[in-house]
Amino acid sequence: MFNKRLQIKLNKNRGKQSFRGELFNIEQLADYAKLLAVHQKVGESTHNNYLRERLAENEEVLQKYNSEVRAATQLSYVTPATEWVIDNFYLIEEHIQLARRHFPKSYSKELPYLKEEPFKGLPRVYGMVVEYVRHVDAQVDEESLLTFFRAYQETAVLKLGELWAVPIMLRLSLIENLRRIVARLKQDQKDRDLANTWINWVEETGSKRPSGLVELVSEMAKSELPFSSAFVSEFSKRLSSRNPSLTIVRNWFEQRLHEEGLSAEEMVEIENQNQAADQLSVSHSIKSLRFINSTDWRDFVEELSLVEKTLQTDPVGIYGKMDFASRNHYRHAIERLARKSKYTEMEVARQAITLARNVFDKSEGTREAHVGYYLIADGQEELKNTIGLKQTLLSTFKKLLGNYPLTLYAGLIILLTLVATFFYTQIARASDIPVTDWRYILLSICCLFFISQFAFFLVNWLSTLFIRPDILARLDFSGGIPAAYRTVVAIPTMVNSEESVRKLISDIEIHYLANRDTHLYFTLLTDFPDADQQVMPEDTHLIDYLRSAIEKLNHKYGAEKESLFYLFHRPRLWNPEEQKWMGYERKRGKLMAFNQFLLRGGIHSHSWRRKEISLLCGT
Image (cartoon, rainbow, N blue to C red):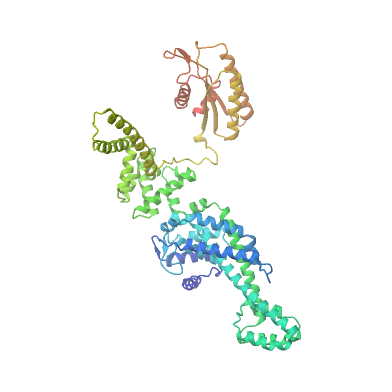
């Protein structure tokens, strides 16, 4: 029964623009969203720029109303809704600017549009948001918003771009709603002012020349009075004085209302209800604008995105452990592929998962079993072939550029240089200067140099247009580093005095305090300065002093586990080329040796407890 009633209401609403409809609870919102998904006819994209133009109009109307109310020296009556608008106008202006910044002209081209009224030619997501705002009286909250969009997607899947556009469309619809309320408030104020003007004439005439009231009533009868709830309410309040000379006006007014099928009491009650409803709608709109600012829309998009749910089935389980930026990078890759192919975003995501699962079933340890291999890495070509994406001239050039970057880079510079130099020589020959002339040779060399520099800068500039830096996918360690990914912060350095030791200990302590984590360790990779012999007299004292300082740090902070801080010191080795005793390969050598230790446990170090070494090596 409820669905039939909703069906009738939906058909009626197609030709309406009102933002104040029947209030729905959660279940009714879900049913209404399903009906919208069934009956809305959608096109691929639109070039309609109406929403940006409408935003500019709304801004002008709201700013003008704010200025007029603030500039008015005396108003007969300021409604509660007007007070809400004026007091929170700074917030309205902020959201107007945000809406303009986040909704560029090109954005509409990426969004599917509606083919039927009342939102014909406008983005589908805008029509959805307006319907939602209408049936919650602009009182936006996370639960009802999620319910509405989740129910809609049971029938029609939304694109990722549409989900990201929800906060923008909420801003646009709420600003539109405020503009319409303000227009009504402005008209009501005009009606109240008109009522006060007539009442002032009536009172002035009644006090100075009572006989003139008959003529005044005649003028009122000839005038086209609005008889709106605002006019009738204000007129009735001012006319309710017990001045007997105004009886003729009072009788005429009551008779006129009766002819219109109205009564003063009913109109006053309606006006009170309208003011209460306007105040509620404005307060809801203002609070909803604040809600938009305080909501993390990344969680909203991931909660509703069916593409996200598909990618979460990554066979190796890595996708779900990645940070938001990496996951969003994968989703953008799907958007680009879907935009260029005949497949939907969901279908592209499923194809990528299928390719990864096929590899996982054979060998789960390979990187080809991760869905990202087919979205942002070398497996892109295989995915493109699967979805039938044809190679364009630009994509072919980018592929060659990726496979042979140095050859193309240097080759293009040389080619431009040679071509420009060839044209120069042709011009020079036309001037009858002998080729063997020293001036010709000097000018040619100078020209070759300057042209090569120009070609170098030109190729560099072109590279920024065609090449984008690769984004490295990252795991999400915002909640802490898991035990399986425990990490060592290694600081390669040289020890030459007690002062340098104190500085090192202070630095490593600061690093720890700024990056506390249960599975994050810190180590110093040290050696001594170059010397003429392998062991110098002060070496033993310095290394003992350094070990003691590390032990004090562990005693100070390492109560919860064995150790947080480590020391790996290398002895000097003879370098026949330098004719010195020194640390092998200096800084790079320390890092290489430490990596070999972590992988194989083979390093000549002076770590004082084997148990601590086994903790780092995972043995």
